[in-house]
Image (cartoon, rainbow, N blue to C red):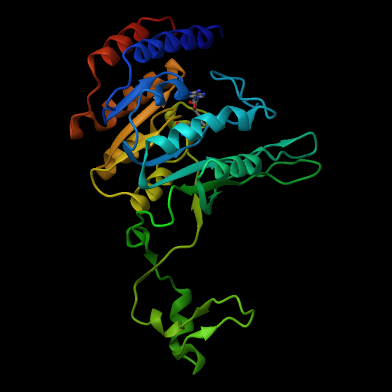
Length: 318
Ligand SMILES: C[S@@+](CC[C@H](N)C(=O)[O-])C[C@H]1O[C@@H](n2cnc3c(N)ncnc32)[C@H](O)[C@@H]1O
């Protein structure tokens, strides 16, 4: 039970070494053991194409890593989000996977406050996607139902950003078969919304199309148990966003990489990854997973400093 404290001390020592070395050119296909705020400060400006992460939850994890108190959550994440804005290339996107917890009988507001703070710092809150955890089992609470979704907040630095919508198209589905069989006169022209919203549709455009654009709700099952991390997200989640917002060879950053899921998705999709993780056990887990699942295929490497650190950590009592 004492081990996590010891592990955090090791990581802090290592990151202060990085600090002494001054600003680094960041090396892709690399995971650094350390505190995200400190490590990010060693990265040059505009060095990554895309960022995706799920930060530690507010105050509700008491396992290997401590949660962040609800009251201090915005203050804690704000300087990290400022660093993320600095290191993201202008046409890049940042997906923040987060869900406010319920506390003292009501939903906390720190995610909403964080969005406002990030906007003040110049981030554009471009979109919100929903990850629907489709395999959630039911539970019983006196005043709500089981939480089965998380926000995937999409931030950008500018209105025009890289987005490859064709990469995530989905089969048109059976619903269209019947709907498109008999088209009315209205279906053949652009039908403007009666609510004067400015939206409209031309149903006949879907004739003959096998694939259509998806919605902003992702129905994906959780898969924590197979990665030795209680908060791991399914690989299909980062993979979907990586396909949508990056091209082959682009550099993807996850500053809270945990068991390395984002790195694995990058390896599978031919993107390069940069990860940061504060808890040595998860860092180790991420390196092991990437090396065993993808090492042979892509020649995954970590530098000498990381290798030495990894070996020393391996020698720590588990
Ligand atoms: C929600 S988990 C991310 C899980 C990851 N998406 C996965 O699939 O395994 C958050 C991670 O952030 C790490 N963490 C917490 N505080 C950190 C910090 N200040 N710097 C870097 N990592 C941190 C935790 O140890 C944890 O592994």
